[in-house]
Amino acid sequence: MLWSSAFITSKIIVDNAPPFLSLSIRFGIVALLFFLFFIFFSKDKYISFKAFKNASISGLLFHGLYLGGVFFALSRGISATLIALIVSLQPILTSFLAKIYLNETLTKFQWLGIILGFSGALIIIISDLIDGLTIVAFFAGIVGLVSSSLGIIWQKKIGSDLSLSGNNFLQALSAAIFHLLLALCFEKFFINFSNDFILAMSWQIFAVSLGAFLILMWLLANNKANETSTLFFLVPPISALLAFLILEETFTSFDFLGLFLSCLGVFIVSKIQIKM
Image: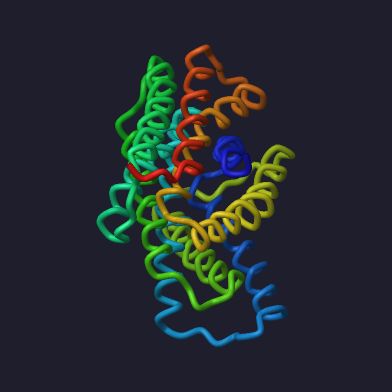
């Protein structure tokens, strides 16, 4: 729910400010909050160069390229539902990458779950493609898709000796600098400080960056990469429902069918561990 809400609030944000400027502000604030938490509550405050490098790369993949692609696509008119659907194909890519780089195995039942989850997402994508999709927005979505998969593989492979607050501070800092550089190079600085913008930005800072992402890091530390990534199949249908309720985007019978298949696929991959 938290991850899906990010697509809805992102649409509101890019309607009131440039995408990269918005992300630089968001992660600048998030970095400050995590830094304060790291300073006051972390027992070990030493950060090695290796830990700094690894966390910074994770930040560029997760918060930089992934969210940069999503925000840019939204700023080019793509619907919140459709961009959520594009990047939700990540579990398929992550499962293949996890098999190659992490030697993770999948049972036949889990492959069935992945196929069902993919089918559910694909049904919703096809039903929403009627409105058209620009090449630029689609490419931005693909950048987000690949980056999120690589981010999960990278984070799972390297682990981290840092505390969650220290790791997330460095990730947010690298993303803030990355987006600020993009904003300085390509964007005009303007922000409409409407109530909707302030509420959406606050939600992304506290509920998404401090909430949903910490949950993701915990899941990656305690589960397989392919099991964790499969939860993203739930993002498209939930995003479609939230977009219908908040942004008044259409929610059809195909969306309901996709929701059912995606939920079934997630259940199979996450819960059934029978090896054939």
